Structures are given as structure tokens and as C-alpha cells.
Image 1 (cartoon, rainbow, N blue to C red):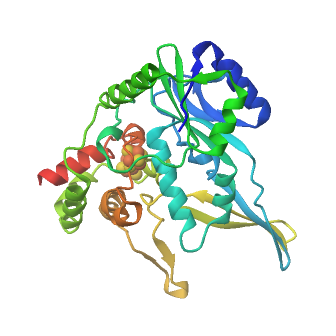
Image 2 (tube, rainbow, N blue to C red):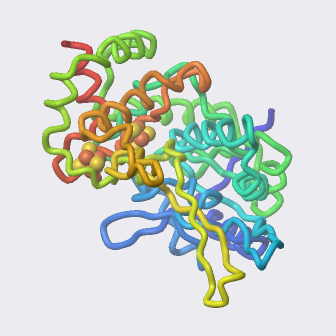
Length: 342
Ligand code: SF4
Ligand code: SF4
């Protein structure tokens, strides 16, 4: 494995060359928040961001995506992947992308997701700043980020750049890289440990202990009723989550009534209609009619149901749900610690 070094003064030139080779999606500022957006210039890049509003999965799993178009009995696929570079993805968000890669590939492979994902080169970044509700240091500690093509870590005079795939190695041709020294590697490793220690929130039990206790709490109605009292079923905690992957599929018909498009939009299991099904003339059934049931379902998905498939919890500790929830009741650390102490 080769490790490279890029001087701070050469970063903009490197990013400029990347932009000229392919679209680059990277963190940029929007007022006092950050979002992933197509970079027009290296001056927009904000590698010092703490968290983005929406997770980077939107680069290959957009909130609204056309799946196919149709006319009479003929359907035409809308899969048109764009070769792109997703730059500056924090390591906890790479872990979330790894989960989606696995879930979208198993059973009936989701070709719309997989084609976009395959066309995306990911440059991960050791966080330089930590958001106010992050706990990524203490969750799923045995699972390491895996799906990135290169990892960058900021040190005093520049960046240690570690390619992990041939695509990652190819990127070094666009910049003035030198071999990283052992001193620079030590400094990068120290930066990684120091920033992890700054996560303000912390889970105090192991993944296994949490999983077992969460399952055992399923029938404790008091816990889930109390925890969800202020929930107004807006679904924000789902929509901002990097590991949520549910979507709704709709057909949009043109006025000619023989053609149209099928598209999907992100869906949210906290919303009232999510688990509602039609029974035809008999009306409708809602499998999770009560908000406490929906609230519990989200936490069961994050802390236990998917663990055996993913090798760890379906939460990477980004803290977006905690920041996005208006009544401030969605924080997995508070919910899990409360269950563990019950
Ligand atoms: S963000 Fe908060 S209020 Fe909205 S659905 Fe989630 S828990 Fe409920
Ligand atoms: S549940 Fe919350 S903290 Fe965990 S990954 Fe989703 S948004 Fe981040």
C-alpha cells in the first residue's frame, strides 16, 4: 500500500484538475450549514465541514429518481449513470454507503442504484470537525469503512492521501503528490484518534448488549409511548439518515393516458401512511398506526433488526436525526441509553 502527501498549497490545483476530468460532488457552505453539491470551482470546497444536511448517498440514490419511462406496452430504462467523483465524504458516511451497497445488491439487485454507485469514485476524508450531536466514535466500532477509493487526512502542512483502489490511485495523476513520510503517517494517525475523541455523545454499551436489550424492550409499551409523546410523525429523522433506504414508487401519466414515467422518492417509516395498505373495497389497514409503534420500529431497525446482515448496527452515529428533530426526541444515544437503563 502506497501513501502519498499533498501540500495544502496544491489542493486547489488538484481539485481544479479533478473538476475538469469529471463532475465533482463535494461539501460546500450554504449560509451556516453544509451540503454536498456539484463543485463549480475549488474555492467552494469546505473540507472543514462538520456535517452536511443530507447525506452523500444522494449522489447515487437521489431523493427523486426516474426509474423508467413507458409508452403503451413498451418500457424504457432511465438508467444513465454519470461518471463522477464524490469528494470529502466523512468516514462514518462511507460506512453508511457500505450498508446501502450491500442492501441494494442482495436479492433483487437494484440496478438503478448499482449503476450510479459503480460510476462514482469516492474520496473519503477523516473529519476535521465534529458536529454537536455526533457519536460515530462509539457506535459499530468493529465495522470499518470499506467502499471508498481513497482516504484523505489533514495534517499540519497538507494531506496524507491513501489510495485503496485503482480508481483512487488514478486520482493522484491529477495532483502534485509525493510519497508520505513515516512522520506524516504518524501525524495522520494521531489526527484520526484526536478527532474521534471529540465526539460529544457516546453510547456506553457494546453493539451486542444494545441489540439484545432493544429486542427485549419491544413489548415495553411504557418506554415507547413515553419516548414518542412529542413526535409529530414528520419523518425528518428518516430523511436525513445516511442508512435509511426506503422509497415509494409512483407512476406519473401524461395527458395522452398511454405514456408516462415511473419514479421513486425517499420514504420515511415515521410518517403515518408508510405502513398503510389498501384492502380494496374493504378499506385500508395500517400495520403501524400508532406513533409509538413507528418510533419503536425506527430504533429496532437501527439497533438490532439489521445487525446480522450488516455485521453491526444500521446507525453510523452521524447525529443528523438528533439535529433535525424539532422536539429533539430522535437522538439514538438518548433513546438507547434510556432503554439500557430501564
Ligand atoms: S424527526 Fe422527531 S418529530 Fe419528526 S418523525 Fe422523527 S422523531 Fe418524530
Ligand atoms: S439513526 Fe441518526 S445518528 Fe444514526 S445514522 Fe441515522 S441519522 Fe445518523
